[in-house]
Length: 311
Image (cartoon, rainbow, N blue to C red; front, side, top):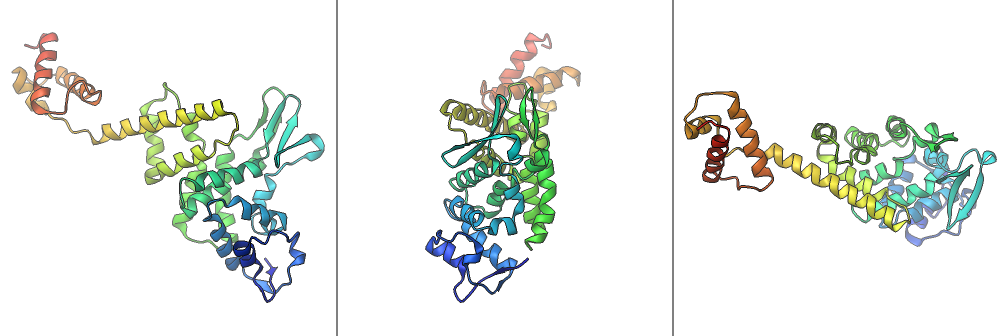
């Protein structure tokens, strides 16, 4: 891969001087620049509060197509088959009664959004690349419109080759980005009152300490201008976070009474009812009906034991 520079460094000129008047790479006088040098400057741009300006300029002069063609690919495709409507720099796919936003401009907005919550460079890379799988999975179905089934899985699989090409070799960062992209839509599918704890626990196991970053990406991925729709999505994510907190609380739960304590309180031998009583006790404590206290728990067990005919 060859990109060039002259006596002045064009990449620094882009970053430090906001030199956005250049129309193409041909307007820059060159000598060879390494991919490491390009990515060093690109990372600096990603760490800005509004990275989209620099990324868009890289696209405008043709540099983004050289280093990250996958991002260019998610711009509008099959232009001959669709009509194009320009609305505030956003291109929208329109076919039949269905339309879909241009994923490139959507991605720029997501990267800007996530920059409001975090300055984690690798989370920003995940935000930048989270939709690259849509190019390979994009299909139009007359009954439902545009679909991108499994684009997260496809996108995650593309990361190894992309980072190898960009000479970003740290396995820890690559694994982190792949995981964020792979599960980027999972929280949305789990936002339901009917969602079981086991499905959320599985996601927590897969994400480990990155669960908060995943939720930040989901939050940043809400780019709709419809206020009500945006508010609904945010409320659902808040509900999902509360479900995670409850699951974490359950994992940390310490019983104030052991099985032996319950047998002594009720003066009974080991039996299946003890397991039932422990579940009732745990539920009462988690719901805040009684405090997690030995004496209060003992009184609760006596009351429940009496109602069950154990004393």
